[in-house]
Length: 335
Image (cartoon, rainbow, N blue to C red; front, side, top):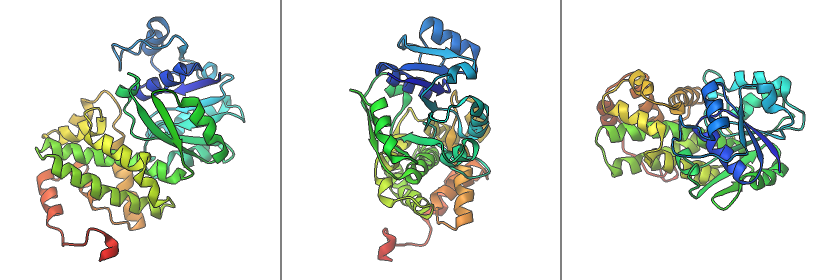
């Protein structure tokens, strides 16, 4: 049995806390809302996100970060990417040298365009053992113990088996890969494409259009990922294609829901104001667009989504422009 601290008591942090508790680990959830801590400790619920779910009694919660991290062997990060650096800075004083940092957030840091592993290395030091967990995994299904598979990658390959054993059980299975860059890039950019899928659905387009988005956007993700040092084959796996499918096609996807509102006529602020959870795709859209421009990577779908979300261009006009681009071979190698 291990002691694990989960930083962030949102839907995903709570769902993963339950996976770990089901595996008989001692789990401490750190939250910043007193009502959430009280709900978990007294009612064994996080009713803000899961009104009908009773959590295992070996999940405790606290507002005290020092207490949360005391004697923890693993720290699981489940906070928005935009606050990751601040959270890590607050944690730094209380971390032991042998603590393993596991990231469950998906995104690119605004402004710096850095992946979470790079932010962790900068704040906590290059010697920090870091693992990221990513794949097609909606919290709404994991909390109901529905079958889910993800993959993990890290800067110390010999620790990946520990992470697999930590999380895996009869309904949650973890694979491993040595491609940390690929896993982080795939998990971040799929949220951007989910915004695009939601916009298409909000405009009334059907499955054909969304299938087109998935297949063509996967090519763009591979272009950027390989340019950053990832392996192309990683994007055909759980953290690439798998996560892309589930996020662009599911009603559970907050990024899809935000895109749907925009496609239905809401502006960005309206769409975000109506969301209960953080929409990482918006921040990742800007970061991905800027990174692609900097590296001169051709990503027309990212550019189109950026035009709708940030430049406030009419989505129908943007789609028409996309459809009327010069004709080309499907596989760039055939050109």
